[in-house]
Image (cartoon, rainbow, N blue to C red):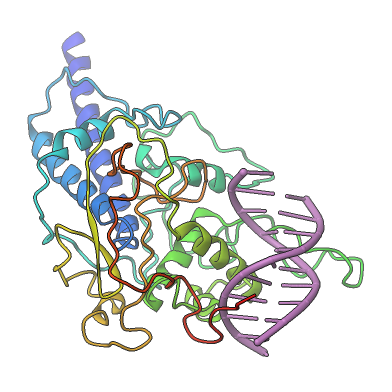
Length: 344
DNA sequence: TACGAAATAT
DNA sequence: CATATTTCGT
C-alpha cells in the first residue's frame, strides 16, 4: 500500500515537474516578447528550463518541492523557481541558441497560456487581472493540479473571455452619451495579444494604437482603449530609476546601448532573436523603425500589477546609476514621428 | 482622423 | 496608488 503511494507520489512529482517545465517554457515564450527589455530574464528562464529538464529524470521520491503551485502569493520564495534561478545564477553562459521563435502566431491561438492558473511564474499581476470581474463562477481554486491540455480550445476568439469584463457591448446604455464607459479590464489574454501585437510592430514606442488594435483582432476593443493601455505600458516601460528593493540576490549586470538598443553587455552582439519582424530591422534599417527604442528598463515597478511575469534583479543596491551606460540620444522616449518635444 | 500626453474618473 | 476613460493639443 504504502509502496503504492510512494509510487504515486513519485509519479505525481514527476508530473508536477513536467508541468513546471511546461510552465517555464510558456513563461519563456511570454518573456520573449520582452527579450529586449529583459534579456537577462529570458536567459535565466531558459537556463532554468534546461536545468530543470536535466534534473527531471533523476527526481527521487523525496523531492522536496512537490507542490506545483507553491505559495505564489509570496513572491519572495517560490521554491523551485527561486532555487533554480539561484542555482543557475552564476552559470551564466550565454546560451542563446535554443530560443524558439514561433511565439504564438496571431491566429494560432494554441495559447498554451490559457492560464487558468499558471504556476508560480505567472505571478501577481496576472493574478489580479485575470480574475478580473467574473460575475458568476469564482474559479474553483481547489483542483488545480492538472488540467492538461483539454481546456484550451480555440473557440475563444474574441467575445469569450478575451474580452474581459462582462459582455461589454454597446448595449445597456441609457443616457445618450453622458456617462463614462465602463472600465475595461485587460485580461491576461487580452494583454498578451497586446504584447504580441506590440512585438510584431516593433516595440511599444513605434507601435500605434490602431495598428495594435488591428493586429489584436479582438472585436470589442476600441482604439482608445488600446491607446490608453499603450500609454500605461509605455509609462511603465520607461526606466523606473532602479527602484525596487533588491531581494536577496545581487548580480551586477551591465547594460550598454547599441544603436539605440539596450542590451546586456554580455550578448549584445547577438543579432538573432525571434526571427520575427521585430529585431530584423535593428541592423540594417537606420530609419525611424530602424533602431527601435527598446525600453531600457530592466525592471518595472514592483508594486505594479503591470509587469512581466518574472522578476529578475541585476543591479546591486549600492550602485545607483553606474549600472547603465548610454551612448547618446538621451531622450528617445517617444515622439517617434509626429511632433516631437513640446517645449513648454 | 490618429496619436500622444495630460487631466479626470474609478 | 494603479488603472481606465476622457479631454485636449497637435
